[in-house]
Length: 424
Image (tube, rainbow, N blue to C red):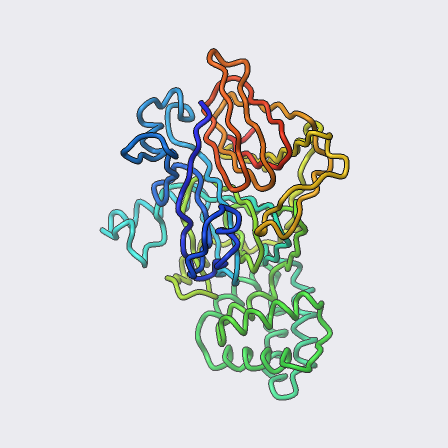
């Protein structure tokens, strides 16, 4: 079955006020709209669109016929999202499978309500995630080499006429132990709310103030200024120096396995993750923070490469396939002229065109397990000509489909779609 699905965007403070409404063809509400969830996670399950007088969700659809609509007779192991990042997200990490199961059980045993604001574990699942940029996206993504962080701290110290002593002390702190131990000790210190931390934060503000040009990369300087402006006094700006700063062009991706510290800073993106809502926050937020638990979960090792590259499957079709069973993500581009210089209305309110480079006249996708599809540009005709009863759905930009397991689907028209599927 090809089933249109829909959901209400979640109104987090870091969301954009206009990007998601523009994508979905809705009028802006005036409040930030941050995430559109497309899956059956109970935190915000998608609804079957225009199905019956009584609305029902993907949870109920799958429960009606789990063998037909579910995965291995159960719920979806993945969750597809559309993100509109208007301000920096919190510094955060997600637990691995063992940590999530233990944390969820412990909070249940302690009687903490699942929807309590101070709850760390809202389910028993891990949460690796993959983000693919639709517009330019900036992010902090995993620990970079410690030597690079030390070099930047020293450059900031040299540019801080009134706060240099505190920053020189930070540099000394970062070289006081082996890298993993140094990172762990540094984060424990940075979130301890001490006078030394306040002095170091003053030093950073001093070093990156208007007119100052410390000898650090322009992206890093812009990031520090943005974090300080949004979260004045928050030590997350100091901790950001330990992380890779990534600027993604449309179509580029980052993959974050469990236990990796990260924060998305700006842009519009498609994200797919294991079906979980477990987030441990470390700063740059007004939400619940549990530093001891976050430190217990973190992997303090260096992330060699935050970017994650796609592979070409066929003309017009590429895939991002991280080494996990929960999900993989496909992007299909189709064009009636085969993509030769054609473009269609894109992801940012139609103001940015999507060039359908490498598009095919038709893309055929395996659908032996369920797929969740969202159109991000143009209009794509999804058909299942080999099914017992041939099916067809005309999907425009911002519309989404749930594709039940069955015969392959054929994609034609002129547009771009992303499809989340069970991992290879």
